[in-house]
Length: 184
Ligand code: HEM
Image (tube, rainbow, N blue to C red):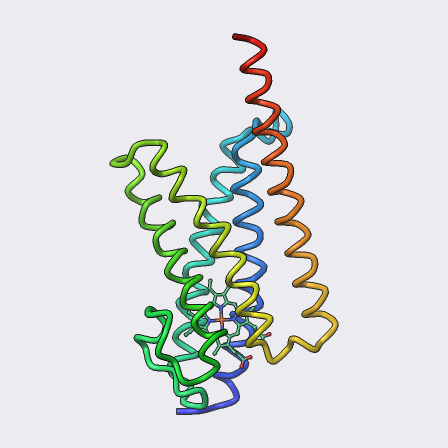
């Protein structure tokens, strides 16, 4: 089946996903710190991080379904899971698939968190940064809207937000380590 509705659905869910995964990544970074205010304790950020990532997984399912059902691109269901072998936009589609696979690892290990050591979970959870970065390249490479100013602004804003949050996270980790060494 090929229908303009499927095309709009693929584009719409892609754009919403970019925003949701950016919000999830930034909230994840923020949830490693203390609360901002007595009225906004840390657990609120953590719950928001979980809720937004849950919605992102549902939207991702819709994004993949619309891409597979739309026969225009001839994307088979397994090409949404295996990051090679696609005939339609093979490089950029594979990056979308890779982003999905990395996200799946992050989601599954988070659901099984109680059975993993804290260190293992933390190391694996860093794959979320890679998933986000790879999905941005996928969106820019495949997007119909990539030439529209609003898409450029959205992408630049998302990249800036994650870059600032990640930098702040790295600086905070370095300062924490220094403080711990001084206290010893
Ligand atoms: C975390 C994973 C993913 C994210 C964040 C993501 C995001 C995006 C974004 C932002 C776009 C551009 C939308 C636009 O045209 O404005 C896009 C396009 C597209 N994505 Fe994904 N995507 C992901 C995974 C996948 C996967 C696994 C597939 C394979 C089934 C896929 C198939 C497509 C297709 C076919 C388009 C082109 C839609 C069009 O015609 O414009 N994506 N994606």
